[in-house]
Image (cartoon, rainbow, N blue to C red; front, side):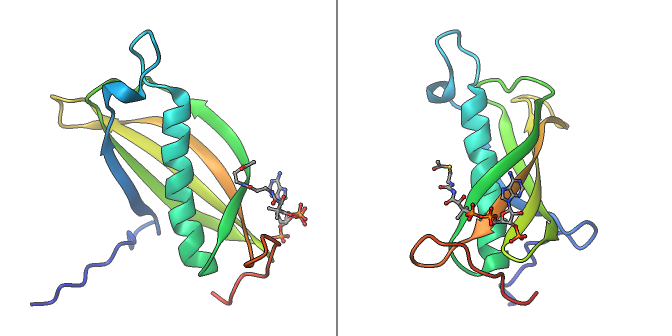
Length: 133
Ligand SMILES: CC(=O)SCCNC(=O)CCNC(=O)[C@H](O)C(C)(C)COP(=O)(O)OP(=O)(O)OC[C@H]1O[C@@H](n2cnc3c(N)ncnc32)[C@H](O)[C@@H]1OP(=O)(O)O
């Protein structure tokens, strides 16, 4: 049996980097999911792509255009897609989208999107050139 499965969508090059359930521990005192929790999931997802593209250590250098279109609720199934948009000498621009499927629904909605910029780092934390694609 062939155990290997492609992880990158051949249509748009995106990766389903994270799928998780929003839990009560991720809420603020009002019972709503923290934007910061969702941002950290998106950062992790972008970091997943950055690690693969840079084939090593990489760090977030900037986030652009973060917009929260819809709230995330406790029990939502949150799926984070990340896609390499462009690469510079040391940096990568990675588009990230967070989708939420409500607990008892079938369809998911886009809740948040942003562009994350990562820089490839060497062992000393200094920027390094990206390897050849
Ligand atoms: C505080 C935290 O813990 S945040 C989370 C983790 N992130 C970090 O710790 C990163 C902290 N930052 C750093 O260590 C440094 O800023 C570094 C190593 C990432 C970059 O070092 P610098 O010498 O400032 O890099 P420099 O200004 O030359 O930019 C490096 C690349 O990033 C790109 N870049 C820098 N700032 C931005 C920005 N605001 N938006 C988009 N790209 C940017 C540059 O265009 C350049 O790309 P290129 O090499 O592909 O042309």
